[in-house]
Length: 263
Image (tube, rainbow, N blue to C red):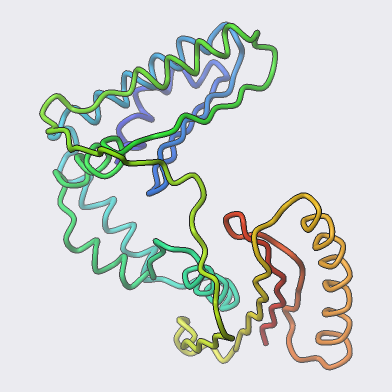
């Protein structure tokens, strides 16, 4: 809804060669600005003004737009066009990291969302919580300009005037999403969400612990060896599936090794 409201209003500015993006999730709100240095201050000011205008006007979204956007989202959540292995990996991640939801749970939640609730959700669920500023600047900006831009972004975001602030005494920012530590092997079996698809998918993962520089290097090397060996053994030699891969990766700040097969 925010993107649909802002994009037409910034089309003249983005036509000059600059771009922006706003990503809102349960973890925070992220702004990205790209373009020529002389135009950046104007781009930042315009985007923040439109962002605040959207959050301050609970009637800004037309009913027809809300219905169309929610219907598109409902179709995305209910349609499974990717390979089964993708959904198996998503299920694995949902088990490991707190706060994830399945598509069916999101669909159930979408049925209870109103236009007013959607517009107010950013302030109620995110901006009212303790937030930690994290910023990076790259390019030909000087230090003063970069610091000034970061300060402007952090202070210019406004809570709606009608919003009743909630107390967060003692609240802290969750900088790293927590990951569970299984005390025993866990096996989960799910149906392939693609009806009529005869393919099976297996994700086998070993969670090793919090990553540091040393073990990230070691597991990076192990992952390269494991990837080639897994493909040679399971795909080429045993022909157990047409999608085979393995390697080392991280979820949040936790290291793991994993192998996947689909066929």
